[in-house]
Length: 65
Image (cartoon, rainbow, N blue to C red; front, side, top):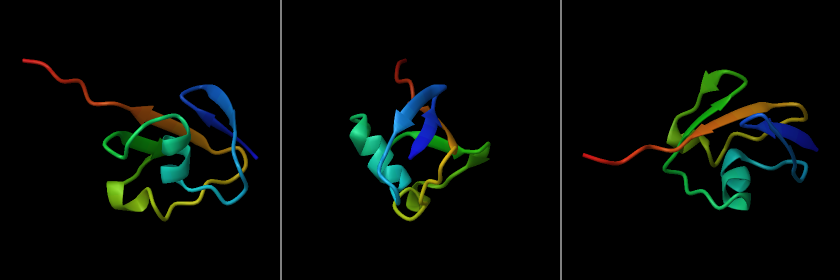
């Protein structure tokens, strides 16, 4: 199944959740995620299943001081 992550086409397994997608690209759940322009809470990452054609946007927090 295909989804877009940060404007890049990704082929993932059917039934994959947001947390599975993050793990497949080496990211922890300490990121901000939108699916189809809807912001998800971190607790939703483990339950939100992705569907064919979903658009996923992931932002990593910037540290500094």
